Length: 402
Ligand code: HEM
Image 1 (cartoon, rainbow, N blue to C red):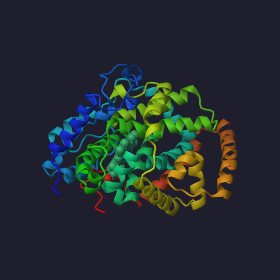
Image 2 (cartoon, rainbow, N blue to C red):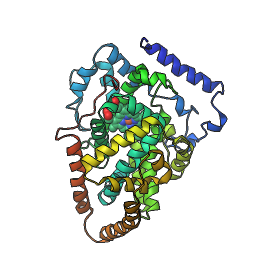
Image 3 (cartoon, protein in one colour):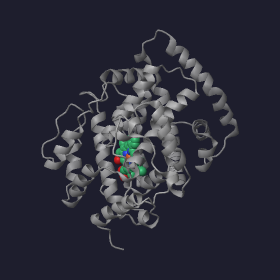
Image 4 (cartoon, protein in one colour):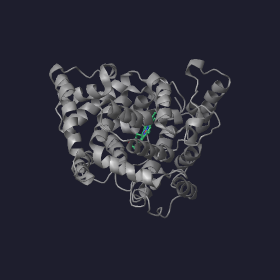
């Protein structure tokens, strides 16, 4: 079967849009989250399931058409810090786009970002575990994400994929994450280009086409779903675990993720302005989509094999901690076995560990001490995943060949 043309793919996306405009999207699933609750405070009322990233998508599609993707990847490899000038030799349209997109939104609050780092210093260990073992596994129960990851290039090299994703988690919690010496702006923009490359490539995969439930992957709504599986889920877990988090910390943590969403290309009208509005949005778009898929189950088990091999945790403990974070429904969907002994040990032991650690947090020990300890863990994970090489996020040039 021949490859669909870019035009056919874009027309397909248009047809989806038209279906929505004609009211063919079931009212039960209509987008009702109000833009007034967003950081923008106002919006155009467009359903984010029919919004992608037109500017970046067009530029990246042209890079493919001109055969420049590998050259751009090589040029961008040395672009790592937010304050660094863009490398010479980039195509003009891409350069202009990156110069515009690297500017932080006007609503960025530097004090809140500084507070977020202080929060990471004290609670980064929990966040790392929640991102890695909670959200990472949950993504296997988000059908569109599981399918996209499974059939894209990263599906054939999960270790590389996790190392790159872990880099984003690491850069987010580093000092000056969005300032000139941090790396998060660069990492988010490289991810944005990667997502555009996936939108270009995936509709050409025969696997993707044969089971397609969508024409163009990674809509703005999809990104928000993943955003909630990271940010809102982690915040809810800290609350459920009764970790004492101040209002200032909670708001700062939200802000960190708001700025991240903006840099990933999410329109401000969809980015929740408060935790209340985030929870409402999460209930509307994350909760109803969670479901098992054959791809998600296979991904989950390959992730477990990797985490077991690289992370040094015993397999039963890994299974039990995932069950503890995600609950029985999702864990059973992913066919993670029950481990009666360690399930009980984690359920009983984790609250004690939290209490012990929180007692230390309450002592006059500076946050940097906790951060330094957790930093060893994080760096160790990144080192193993990256096999000692610097990790660079690059646009894929093909799909999963298998
Ligand atoms: C790539 C983060 C949402 C699918 C990446 C990468 C990062 C990342 C850091 C680069 C790693 C790599 O190249 O392997 C995020 C974040 C998201 C998000 C923070 C939302 C907050 C999504 C969603 C989907 C998706 C919603 C699908 C529905 C992919 C795929 C790749 C990718 C297929 C490329 C894998 C490859 O072939 O290399 N993402 N992502 N992402 N992401 Fe996302």
